[in-house]
Structures are given as structure tokens and as C-alpha cells.
Amino acid sequence: MSGRPQPATTAAEDLAKIAECRRWGDDLSRPLPTSYFFSNSRQPGPEPWEAGDELERLGFQALVFDEVGGGNWHVTAFRRELLSPESVARRREQMEDIARRYDLVYNGWDRARSLREEQDGPRARG
Image: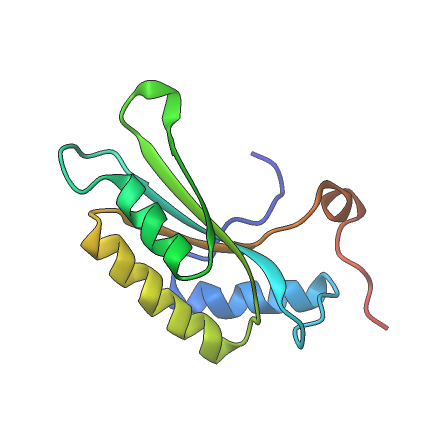
């Protein structure tokens, strides 16, 4: 596994993820590209597409896919978000509710980064 940070999957990790954004030099006063992750390997149940539709109604771009046709569904939602402890806590509550209603597992969130940002790594703060 690479040294790439993993998504925040608990409320405590949310705060650590925000601190990580600061270490990377992110301007937390501006909306940042953020990804939210869900999965489901149980069938039958609500279609993952329905969760994707709801996320799009909420203003996200959603990607829904079946991992190699094996019934392991993934939903990823993308949107620029302000990242503060309060906003992340509210978003976690919302995402966990969506996961419950659509029989998904909420796998957390991460600050989406471009390939260039990944290659450059965290910026030194001075």
C-alpha cells in the first residue's frame, strides 16, 4: 500500500483529515474538492443507483459502479465543500443517513487531489 492517506471513516478521523488538509497547505476558507465513498456487497436491496440519484439531487456528482461485475457496488460522490469541524460533522450525519436508507456502508470522505498535487506532496507552511 502506498503512503497515500486513507479516507476519514470516523468522527475522530474527520478532525485528523482537516488537520491533514492544513499540512498540505489547503486554504480551508475556500471550498475544496471532496469525495465521499460508499459500498455495498449485499443483494438484493435498494439499488445503489438510487443513492447516486439522491446525491445528485443534493448537488453532488455521483459515480456508481459494479466492481468487475461481481456484485460489489461502489458509489462515490464529488463536490467542492468548505471543510470545518462543524460542516464535516453535519455532512457525516447526512452521508450515514443516506447509507442506512440505501443499505450501503459509508466508507468516509477525503479531500480529492489532482495528480499534480499528489506528486508535489504537502507544502511546507512558513
